[in-house]
Length: 506
Image (cartoon, rainbow, N blue to C red; front, side, top):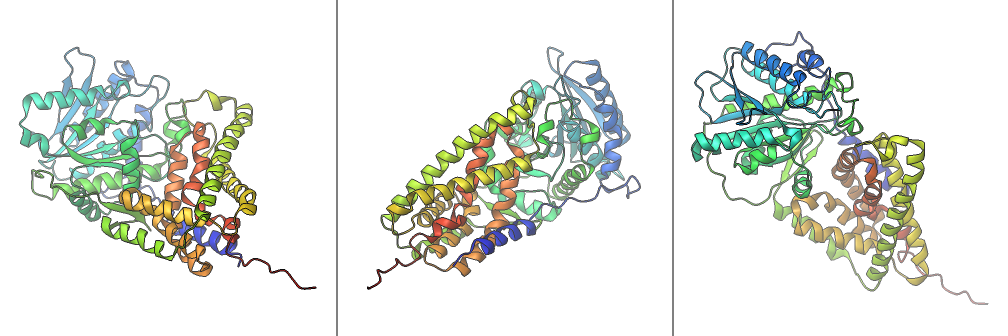
């Protein structure tokens, strides 16, 4: 049975059901207690009119404007100057407020060649408007705003603030902070919450109470933990503070370029980040002051499904990944599948590297710009075609050497091992384990259900990976279909699932 169309349709439907949806930007006439992206973007037009590197006149003017805006909202603002006078952080709170509580954080500087509307004008706009909305009727005693300096120079302002806090505060006060940090590597698309600090059980409970619709998965958290990337949140996490780190990543080709302007910053994306930050701040302000010491707990498994954060215990993920392996009858065909898989990976990476040559010729900035020179979705389509094409070619080459198909057995076993060993990251592969195992036993129609579930869990992850990676990562993107959707390669499924033709008599 040829299931190419049903499998592909199921994956596409699953992606569509879980496609990130952005809210409309609230107008300037919205109720004062509501976050409004329209209001937030008004001062940003001046803040991001030109680059504002640390120590520049433009940067000093932005600090003055931020201080005035926070003072108007009822905050008491003080300037935290580094010993060498190079860095200036802004710290705002209600008069006489304790150190502990909720801290809204962003950085004020930009790189010298970019106006920094998103990086990190987004953060400045969000924390000031969120602080204003929450403080209607008076600034809560537990609400603070921290605007750091020198982030682009190596997180210097955040490090200076943590050092000052250690010198003046006790351990209990430092542990009671809940940080909501806003960053950007792009200018549009959904809001992503890509790392947390603190006990995930309590963090996720407050997340549910806040109604935040940002993309949040334990997979993204697991991947970011091993990347060399850093934000100010890294410094706060190492200091023992709890919190969430937000960013935009779509539109990454504008990152650190002159195109990072207010005109290119999506109001809907600003609204998405602002709603989450405002909702989470209110959820945590309603809790007892002093969040307590983190309680030992295993890694939480959570994913974004249909706009809601869905959680599952690690043992359930492991069980769901291991059960379908009982359907398999692996033999030497697994070795053939391993050979086809390795051949396809090598070919996909090689072709992707080769494809970068004409891309650099057509788009001269491809090899020089620090981010993407090509919109990511055509790039993702190219990577998908390379991966699927190489997989089909490898299976055709190995068909004469195997009476049975090993690709599906390998796909099921490999994905199950990852999900059992690392459930926080491998949960997204569990539907693929079922799809591969069912197809290996000939239950093609039942495998379509697994494909639908895989589309729900894997589709947004692949899209996020695509927009988050740069054009130079095309070889990596070309591997993603093989690593996550290899069970759906149609030609490989036919090997061994069809009876051998019997010789006919004379």
